[in-house]
Length: 146
Image (cartoon, rainbow, N blue to C red):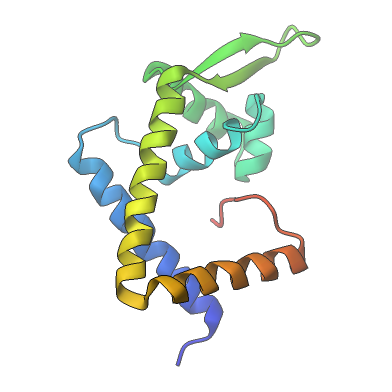
């Protein structure tokens, strides 16, 4: 049997692939996994493109490109930075927050499918055990793994 790290990576990939397949079916803008990490990051804070670059592990230019796409699609907006005239904050718009709720519903559907395969109690135990491990190693935020 494969190591747990491989099984977790494969399960994450499988769920992500199913999520994006379903996302394409509803004909929204061509959102990619990088956009999802931005939505999650901005759900709890406003940030600069430099903050996003650091979080995503990409260049500031790559983060700025992602922000520009999301601004064009009206998922985020830019706001003036109060102390740095060269910087701008990026925040989710109402459309962005609505999308995040929609995405959360799709993730819940995928989780329900997993529960139907492995059992509700087993999924609950799996979630609890993963949370214990993440607490033990001090990981409390979703970060990209590319």
